[in-house]
Length: 481
Image (cartoon, rainbow, N blue to C red):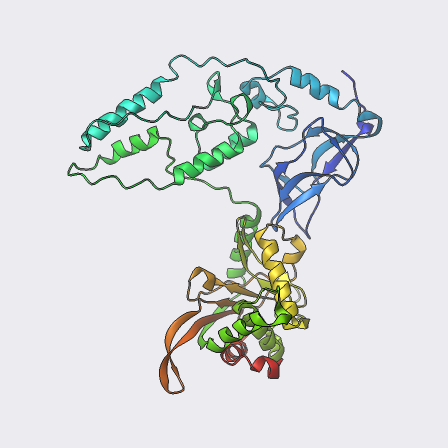
């Protein structure tokens, strides 16, 4: 074994990929010990309280050690990977090779200290015809389950059960434990999944993360409604027993971390720090909807995202221009109201990682076509999970479009550090008095929440009324802008 001096090893520390972030979760490693890396190569993906970010390595070398497995939350400034550089790079692979040549059992793997796991079960083991011998009686539970199902079918009045389809192979075991890497074991524990019920798809019968997620999805699928029978339903105890025999989890626990953790903390802080007031107005937006259709045919908007949200955003920007005091924040430490002379317009977006609020910088200075382009880019980036931490900082006012979910309106909570948020409800065809007659019109409800420490009822009402007036008569965009 070649010994490397510490001077040939570089430790790459978890960086602060945002402003003031203190931790990040390692979502995925793209390299393993023994891999050669080059300056600028992405080695892992991490999730911060703001977004998912890929981390590039800043030097050339050979990966010597991954200090943390996937799924671990690491403090900023903590070393996450060791890379052998210079003369030590050639020797870095030797200890790893020796470890590969000596496969460890699952029990020995679990006993290893978490700081160093160069070899995991299923990694680097040579492919051969070797097969693990199943434990005696391993098929007994399956046979028992089939017998139990047949008896239950007869009790329900359906007669003898038809021959069951071949069951999915049970997870191979070494000793008494299914084969799985430590991160996969942690994931299964967090999701409440029994690894003994998971069918493996990895090499040599190793259970992967995908296998665990597949087991969760299978458990979540609604069961088909059974044929009605005159026989009373089985007792709750029997039902619970039957569910357990099929491996259906009764509860699922999801760790609160990353974006969801940050959102929860921010919403609690906002709700119990800023006194919220919410006002509502229902408005006829028929003319606005007609204008949307006209803009879609305009060559100037070709290839741009044109929808009602575009005109609602522009209406809010015009209302802020007419009532600039709404665009402010409360400085508790200095006991001052900070009025912003720019608008970074936040757009709340629901993503698989949770609610995020990226914002359009200096939206007040953009023309309508420019705003359309910015909105389209913001939405596309959020859906792809590529929103940067910087895009979610410095917002001044936010719009949340709950109408896309078919909701009439809501009482939105302020984004921390902002003084107002506008909720847009669903636009529906409703009977409306128009020019003295009841006619079907496109109608929506707007809700404006504001911080009552710096926005009084008069100011909040003026802003909401201005937005409503513009949407009712969108020509005001020209005269008021």
